[in-house]
Length: 179
Image: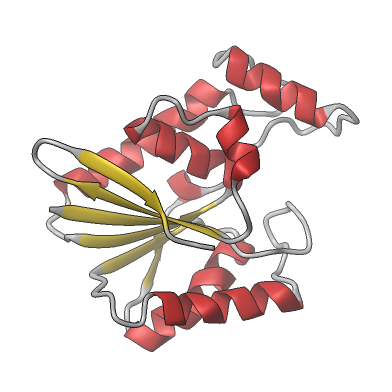
């Protein structure tokens, strides 16, 4: 059985690529060490965004497992423009997966990246895998396994959040493990 631990990054100072974790975010990252203390982990893949790397770095150091950065785990950019009604536009993008705003990526394009990452992992010989990503892309990763995962589930995610996805020959189970 293959197990994927999907982690949404801890609390950060913003959304830009170089946004760092807040003080609370650093504390949350240290709590991940406790959460995974007894779990065997084979490999860690992370978004290259600073907040994702900073979230998983304490666990990486504790386990002695290097972080493999993968751009496919980077956050989906809604648009290069700022919108006061960004949440409405984000919902629209979940209603129409081909909707693409200026300088942004459609949900379908983001899902394609997510699916490529999952399919790589499914071919990978490793059994216990951590993926560190962002809210929108984490939702799309979850959608790969559960087609009900969408806009509402995105806004139910916390920072951080952790899901255990167990992939068996006949059944895949998803369990939220962060509280």
